[in-house]
Length: 86
Image: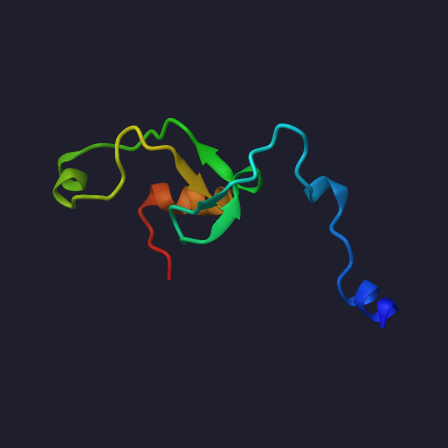
């Protein structure tokens, strides 16, 4: 039985484990809403969002000084492109 679990659920590589100084608190992706440890995702501390009259009238839920968090770079690019998660 031990061999079966060792084969089915191998240990993750050391490169994926948190290192000393990594922040391991869970954060939610601002694009898809998935929870992920902060050291595994992309943290955008000073978001550079284009502010125009159209985005102000849409009443977007992104604050000016809020740090944004994404699962990966694709979600970050899609968020800034104005796409929605499906």
